[in-house]
Image 1: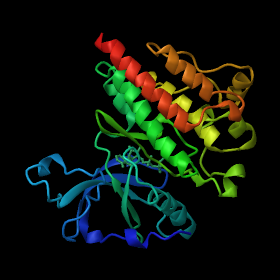
Image 2: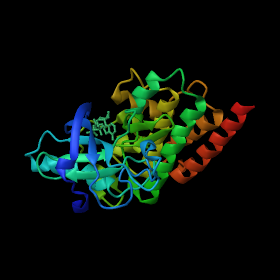
Image 3: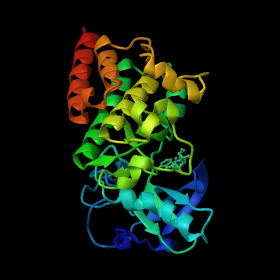
Length: 306
Ligand code: ATP
């Protein structure tokens, strides 16, 4: 097991306040983290820029940053706490502008995982609340940003396994980030080929080979991303509403796919349809998806400025 020793935080510097969510392992709080005085260094929030409140002095970093604190109910069950911390071990490996950053952990009871805060919360709720004012271009931009994160994970040979709009958080109106690495695994980890997760599988997002054989690969992540794009363009509608989980695979095997969302550029629906190729090898990889989304984004901005 990789160590997160460098990530150990001084709990007295962390102040949880309001509860903002409920996770599989326990409640999630918003709070603050007072950065230890290390002299001038990198902003731990990781955006590489100084925060707005800090613009007068470009050299200094904020003393206090807003964070999300994940807590674990089963503090005294070593198996559960290890699973809880597994997400932190995974997150510490990543450094990407569209992946939620790990700030650190408190590994003694009560165990906390401290992460970069996504101020505007869950994407699905955000899409629903702001459906009237969200432009087409903004939705495309979210899809593109997520594709850059997924292309990065692909280059690291990392399989997420739970790509869905519910696992995307909103940092600002023009910036979304991938979160929730609870189900994710390294490709080299054989266990994910025949996993027995304790949580219900997200069948309606899963590829046929994941449903049938529990096979999870980058190509099955690509399928899930197609579903995630669909949810974004549908402004937070979940896929296959009213369909029983057990009927989803029958539909897929019959060649049925999620329908064209309103106002979806034909080129984007074509890309989504390629993500839903029955054969994993026929699906594009994330690098290609990223390039195609970039082209679609540019086409759209030209069309909408005409
Ligand atoms: P599940 O497996 O049910 O999705 P989980 O244990 O993985 O739960 P999360 O989904 O990560 O937990 O967190 C639960 C909720 O807490 C999120 O849906 C979101 O509302 C909030 N949350 C988690 N992390 C953050 C964050 N970094 N910034 C803002 N809100 C967050």
